[in-house]
Length: 178
Image: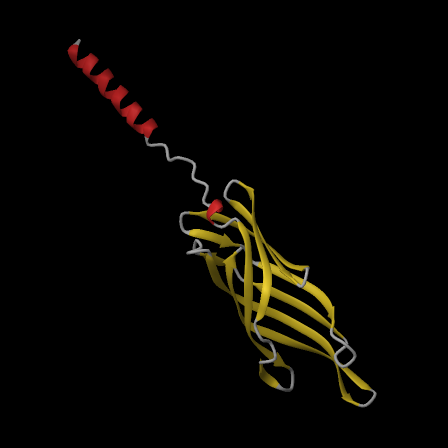
């Protein structure tokens, strides 16, 4: 009888200790949620048929970009990047103890570029990224960038040829919480 009572007591202690080990629900997203003033720095190479690889050096960093990170559901976020009041990217992500994990993102848009270049057809893919929690309100990450850029080039007066360049490189994001 004593062995049976001892066994029941041991099982009760094990059951209590197992149920008390339940990990508290931690909201990792709250480390990231907010509005940031960002700088986007592209580093891109274009491969143009017949011309080879061309580094695109005309792109300076884009300063004053607005980045808003909102929690959508528990530990899931939406990162919205806005340039000159135009939302460019809406990137989904999840947060855990390792950081904010951003999904890949596809950007397909035609942008008017003026009389010289006409319309630019952008088909850009941003790779996934893991972002460390902000330190002193500062956040940063780098993601791969690939895709195509289509445009019409005037090769001689009155002769316009469609050109599609392959893009490869990365995009660095750096910001400060507002």
